[in-house]
Amino acid sequence: MEIVHATAIAIDGKGVLLRGPSGSGKSDLALRLLEAGGVLVGDDRIALSVRDDFVVARVPETIAGKLEIRGLGIVHLPYQAETRVALVADLVERGEVERLPQKRMVELVGQMIPAIQLNPFEESAVAKLKMAATLEPSKIET
Image (tube, rainbow, N blue to C red; front, top):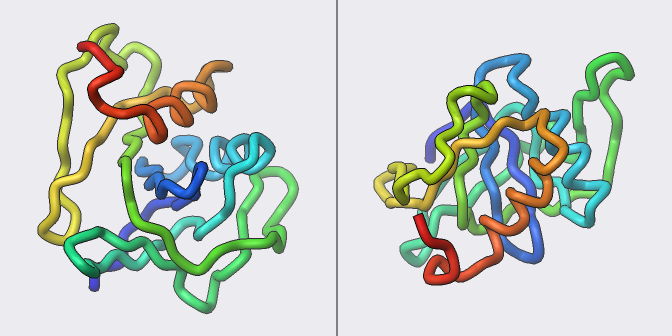
């Protein structure tokens, strides 16, 4: 098991791991994903492990159901304890996002997972993330 600084959300049953430094927009994007039908797994710290060749993201009990909303505080929300990670979203500045990126894979606890770079503050960030998490890879040309 490995603890990572990230936020995990389940979108249509697929786990998305949001990564980035403090203040990069992980919790802000998570809040918008929740409003769009996503389910909170965990905010700020996520335990990663491998089960049946899948990467599983699990919220530590001490922070289960808690989401830090800058300017409001820590709110208590419904959550699911774990999800299989289908996608990693590395949060970056707008100018760092490639227009037509090559397919990326990142290693999590010894397993390779598809990954994208995303600016979390763009209006389309939620739609892009939902599409990346739920579309079959063959439906995306790069």
